[in-house]
Amino acid sequence: MKAQTDRSMVIGTVIGWPIAVAGGLFVVLGWAAIKLLIACVRLKDES
Image (cartoon, rainbow, N blue to C red):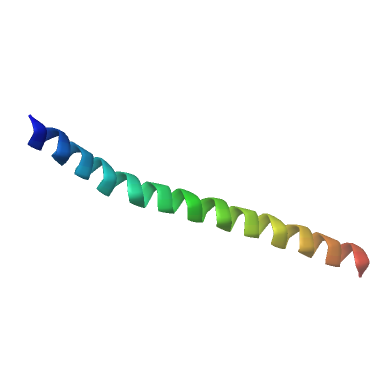
């Protein structure tokens, strides 16, 4: 029984890590895109 729980934990970690990393990257990229968009809008307003 112990081996089975360890195995499912390993599988959960292997599946969970890429999802967490992808989620973090998605948030960072989205935040950067919004900042860039705001910067572009401000530049357009000034010119």
